[in-house]
Every structure is written in C-alpha cells, then in structure tokens.
Image 1 (tube, rainbow, N blue to C red):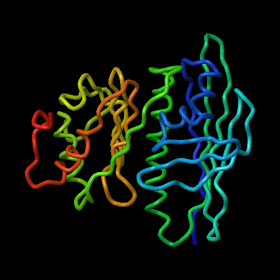
Image 2: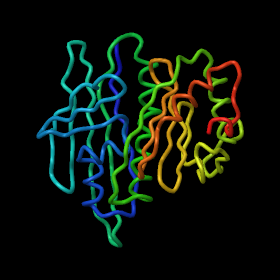
Image 3: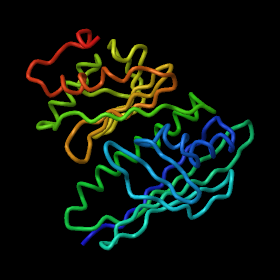
Image 4: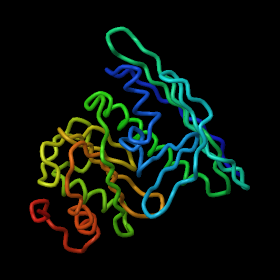
Length: 247
C-alpha cells in the first residue's frame, strides 16, 4: 500500500520571469527558500539537509525562463518525488508562478509522511513567494538546526509562541516581540510550521518528520547562528527561559 500525491500551488509575484527562474532553477536560488543547501551540477540536483543528503534529483526540463523540472529516481519500493515550475510573465514586471509537487510514498505508514510533506510544501512555497516579493534578485544564506527530540508537540509549540511573544494561536500579521527576532511579523502558519518575516531574514520553525523542532532560516545578511541551538534546547527544558534571557 502507498499513496500517489500531486500538489498544485500558484501565485503572482512582483518579479521578472528571469528573477523567478534564478530562484527556482539555480542552487543558490533553491537554497533561499527550500531546506538545507542545494547544488545543481549539470543535470543533477542535490540537497544537503542536516547531516545527510536528500535523494538526488535529475533535471527533466530546463527551458529558461519558462519551465524547470526535476525528479528523483524511483526506488525499489516505488518512492519518488518530482518538482515542476512553470513561469509566465505578465504586464507590469510581474510573473505568475505555478508549481507541481508529485510522487509516490510507499508503505502502510505513508499518512504521517504525507501530512508532514504537505505542510512543509506549503511553508516552502510561502517562503519562495516571500523571497520574490520582499527580496527579488537576492539569495539567502540557509541556516538549518535540529533541536532535541520533542516529547509533547502542543507544549513545544506553546513554548515557542511564548518565547516569540505571540499568542497561543498566532496568525499572519501578528508582530513578534522577542530579542531573538527583532522587528519580526508572522507571515505564515499551519499545524506543523511557523514563519516570521524580518527586514533581513525569513525565520522558519517546522516540525521535523523524525521528531525534533527544526529551524530553517533564510538570512539575507550574514548573522551568527549560534543562538539557535540554545533557543531550541530551552523549549524542551523544564525551566523555560524568557526570550530576553537568550541574548
């Protein structure tokens, strides 16, 4: 048993087709909004995340600046993931971007993986559109850090929201009151993720499929990422620190 899946997301962004192409079809561009760090070498797409590499992808279409697509090899169990980006220029220096993420998840336990992938894909697409809206023509420095194992997800999310000065159920547009993210505002949230946009970064928190809270930030100016391991550890400690004590 397993599940075939296909997700369609689209948006109109205030960027040129060439800027959109650079964001979805180059290593630095994909690294700015996906997870980990992506490299494109000829027809091979490789993404490192955490301590390992995700399955390699192979380019199946490259028609700049209109269409880019790649997919992983099909495993012995039938598993694969494919990505396609369709770019259409519009008047007024805007562009319509359409994306398709599809594939097959094998096994009887596909549901949890599918749920995590669905929520994660929503976050990544949101980050992509935010990059094109707020930071067109710029590439981000990815920062990915895994926290300790989470034993109680509702409590961990509650502590994260508290540490960022947010209500228990934050919504897009809510201001962040925390010294770890100055001048931030919630830009996106779903049951597995939270994104905060700041003048020089998009800060992201997501429920890792293997049981830890992950930060997957996109920094548009260099910054010391050293604060984040202690921040994540504090969310799982019995003595929750206040945001100001994490300076």
